[in-house]
Amino acid sequence: MRTVPETGPETTIEAVPDLPVVRLVREFAAPPEQVYRAHVDPELVKQWMGPRSVDMDIDVWDLRTGGEYRYTALRDGKAIAHFYGSVHRVWENRKIVQTFGFEEMPEAVSLDTLELEDLGDGRTRLVATSVVDSIEARDAMLASGMETGVVEGYAALDELLERLA
Image 1 (cartoon, rainbow, N blue to C red):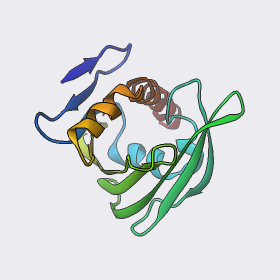
Image 2 (cartoon, rainbow, N blue to C red; image 1 turned 45 degrees about the vertical axis):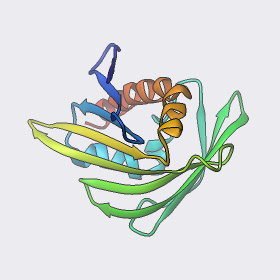
Image 3 (tube, one colour; image 1 turned 180 degrees about the vertical axis):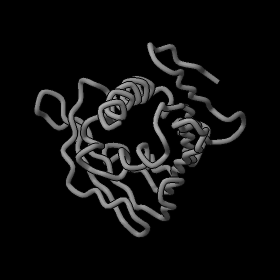
Image 4 (tube, rainbow, N blue to C red; image 1 turned 30 degrees about the horizontal axis):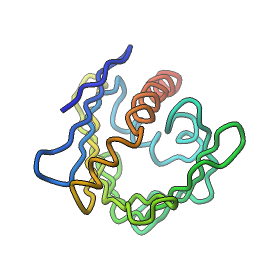
C-alpha cells in the first residue's frame, strides 16, 4: 500500500497482494450526490479528471447502466491517449461498475468499480477497485504514471466540489 502525500486529503493507492487488483481510496469534503455528479456529468468530468497538464476531448460520456464512454487525452492540443469503456451497472449516488480500456494498449482492459460511501457531515469516501488480467498487468498499471493523474485529478475534484457547494 502506498499513501500519496499531497496538500489535501491522502490518496491511498494499493496493489492487493497476490491478486491482479489495484484499489484507490480517497475522502472528499462533499456529499455522495455531488461526488457522483462530478463523475457522470461530462462538463464536470472535463474539469478534474487526469493530470493537470492534460485536457480531455469527450466523444461519448453516457454513464448509465448500459452506457459507454470514449475520450481523448490532450497535451498542448495534441492527442496523447484514447480511452473507452462500457458501463455495466450504475446505482445512483452509490456505485458505478464499468470497463476501462486504453486504445494504445488494447490488452490492458480492466473492470472498475467505483463506490461512494456517505461518511455523514457532508463527507464521502470514494473506493475505486480495478481488476486486470494478471499481476504483471497490475504492476504495469501502477508503473504507468497513473499516480500523478489520480492525485492531481482528485485535487482538482476537491476544487470543483468546493465551487459547486
